[in-house]
Image (cartoon, rainbow, N blue to C red; front, side):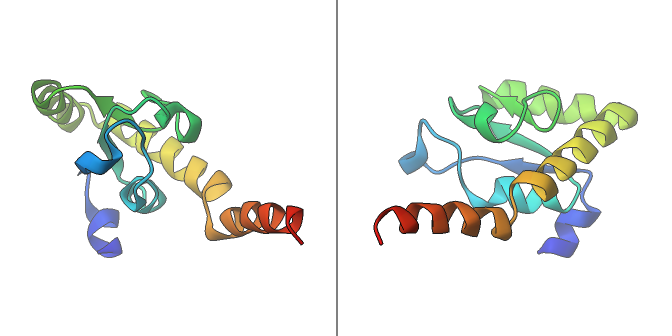
Length: 111
């Protein structure tokens, strides 16, 4: 799976209905971590993880998703720049190490 993400120019992501308002599935980090441009559905907290338009691309409709995919397939430099920025963000802020540090801090409050 990771090899496919790495070889992909663009990876699409759409959260399941249970996560209707909030972003947070693994695909966000798997895709960006492997250096593919992530085109994902817009969620109100997405900006807390990535900067839309600079580190990932977010759509609000199927039509807009299709337009974005076509656009970024035709604009290599922009696609590659956003993909690189998304990868840098993931490798800097969204690794298992960072998540475990956050988890440890939460647990420490209750010990």
